[in-house]
Structure formats: structure tokens, C-alpha cells
Image (cartoon, rainbow, N blue to C red; front, side, top):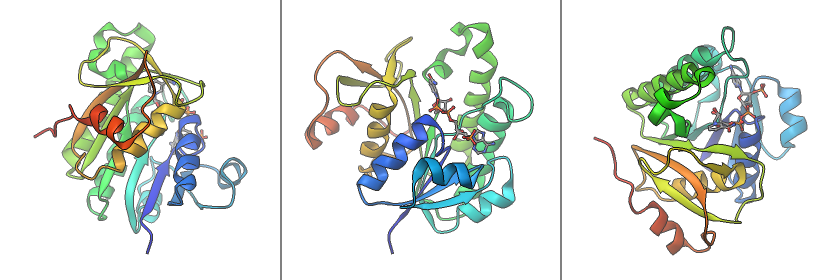
Length: 227
Ligand SMILES: NC(=O)c1ccc[n+]([C@@H]2O[C@H](COP(=O)([O-])OP(=O)(O)OC[C@H]3O[C@@H](n4cnc5c(N)ncnc54)[C@H](OP(=O)(O)O)[C@@H]3O)[C@@H](O)[C@H]2O)c1
């Protein structure tokens, strides 16, 4: 049976990019969405669409059944309170990670943010959200499921494959990357089974876009598993 890729936040801008790239690779995709009608309209028919909420453990148990890989691209839609950063970036991620760890999930990708590494330098209105993202990262590390924590710079709508990719730890104070390139980074990382229990920052950079498996291997080479 085909391995199931669960995309949480599939109706978001990055989530849609990830889903379409997975479908192009003929992967079995299950989209975890808050509104199935919206999900179908945005994502099409060629995938499973399951309605739920990452703050509701009953829906998480249901959606994670049989899942091989989780890609969590959810993001708080509100600056605080109901469905704000504490509930989405921390509580929701913690619940997803806890259930994933007990459901046979092989790897869990969490989309975090570059600023988490230096939340104290962030503009005031972002500090709190970054702090909840940091706590979400911690909860994932502590859950026991194998993880990839990806900290992108500011996300843009540029086309993918137009520039180089810089990736590693403490690589930049600021920077940006297109959602298309970020989705490709995530899929390329998942294609390498040895990449596990890592946290990395990623931004676009001047230079040629990676073309071959060797280019991508070079990009990922500096990553080391956290102990
Ligand atoms: N924007 C940036 O510059 C930037 C920079 C660094 C990192 N990031 C991170 O990158 C990720 C993707 O960003 P984006 O801008 O592409 O996302 P986005 O378009 O804002 O989408 C957010 C997604 O999260 C879903 N969501 C919100 N609350 C949820 C809940 N309680 N349960 C289930 N799903 C929920 C939304 O569903 P609905 O469609 O139902 O609302 C939507 O699918 C986020 O984690 C964000 O923090 C963003």
C-alpha cells in the first residue's frame, strides 16, 4: 500500500504548494483541513480530504491513522486568543506530535520560522508568536517521533527554481524564500531517509538553483542529527 503523506494546513499558501508537488510525484496525500468544501475547491479530487482541527485530539487521532509522514504547515490566523499562536503553533503542534509518536508515523516535518532562533531580536508584535513556535518545536523534539524542523525566512510568492538555497544552522539573521522553493526543500529532505532529528534554517540566496540529486546532497550535507 502507498505511504500516506498527511499535510496539515493544506489550504494555506505553503500547504497548497506542498500538496501539488506531492501529487506530481504520485504520492498518496491526505489533507487535514478545517473546512472540507474549501479543501476540495482548493486542492482538487486527487487526494483524501479529512476535516478537523489541530486543537482537537479526536480529529487528530482519526486523521493520523495509517500515516507515514506528517508535514505540518499550519499557521495561526489570529494574532492572539482563539486560534492564535498559543493554540496553533504550540498546543496544536504538541497534540499532533504526541499522537504521531504513538501512531507509527515515520517522520514529522514542522514548518517553523527563521526568527525562532533569535526571537529576542524580532519586532514586538512577532516576539510572542515566535516564542509559541519555539515551544511547539520543543514539544515535537520531546514527543519521540523522528522530526525535521524547518525554519524558513520570510515566505514569498516568487516562482521556484530561480535561485540558490542556503540551509543550515545560524545561517542568517534575516532572509526570504519562495513557498515553491521551500516546498521543494521539504520534499527533497524527505526523499533522503537519513535526514532525521534535525533543525535547520533555510533562505534563498544568489546563485544557481539546485538541479541534480548531487546538488541537493551538497545542500543537505552539513545537517547533523540532534541528540
Ligand atoms: N508568512 C511568512 O513570511 C512566514 C515566514 C516564516 C514561517 N512561516 C510559517 O510557514 C507556515 C506556512 O505559512 P503560510 O503563510 O503559507 O500559511 P497560511 O497561508 O497562513 O496558512 C495557514 C494554514 O493553517 C491552517 N490552520 C490555522 N489554524 C488551524 C487549526 N486550528 N487547525 C488546522 N489548521 C489550521 C489554515 O487553515 P484555514 O485555511 O482553514 O484557515 C491554513 O491552511 C506557517 O507555519 C508560518 O508560521 C511563515
